[in-house]
Length: 125
Image (cartoon, rainbow, N blue to C red; front, side, top):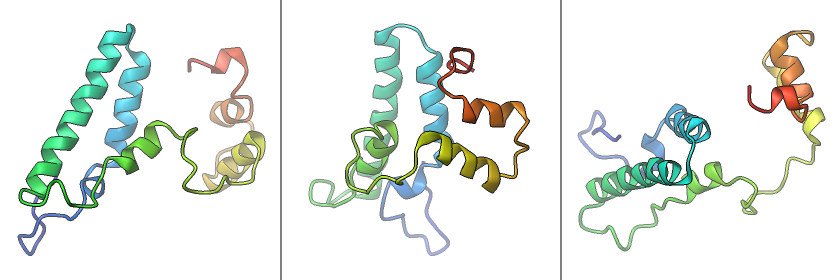
């Protein structure tokens, strides 16, 4: 995960060193995996790598540092995160904003999936 920066210093937080793409890949692997035990192993492996990186970055103050797994938990369990207020947008309104911001054609397949995310044909795509 982490590598020393130009000054040779290690980063101060593990979360700063885990690319969002890695977290997305983790969630996709869990989603595509069948069986609870296999899913647990995937998540346990991610957590173990996080702990190893934490120990490497904070070798002497591992127990007292404020660097935690919380940022990853917020991504893995967004429905439980109450630290930040909700967007104040319904899902369809948020989808319309994504379509506009990402400059996706409103008629495209991706836009339709966003707008109709609850439709059964979009559930597993």
